[in-house]
Length: 148
Image 1 (cartoon, rainbow, N blue to C red):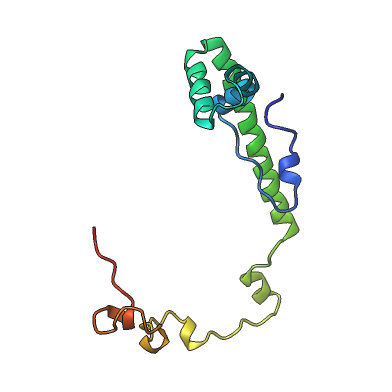
Image 2: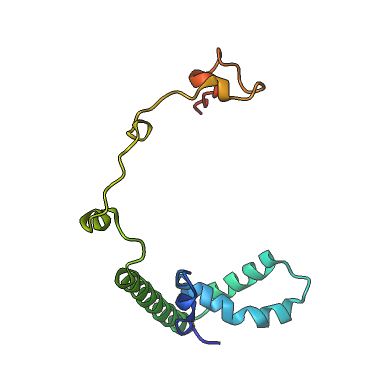
């Protein structure tokens, strides 16, 4: 079982690269099959986690250093995949920006009066009858949150 993979995670259509594993997570991943065999099939996930965490705490510095190095390599893989994904997004030009469309001669649609930041209370007549009574709550029947 190797470390962080060869970049296949980031090549799926539109999915982000898998986040890097910590040294402890890589340790758990490597030791999980043996611990499952040792503890048996009926052991809970919490029991497995507790056993693996105990093993991590008891691991000597040399073994921990091995997993710290694997985690650093996985972090480098992740950073590389994120950078590759970001640069490919920039070069592909996914989603042209509003500024680019305006600069290319496309006119900007005029804003309607309701989209210019004007805040209006929620109309009570659009509320269901069994909602809070409008007289006891602000904004036409929306109950006010109580402060803790």
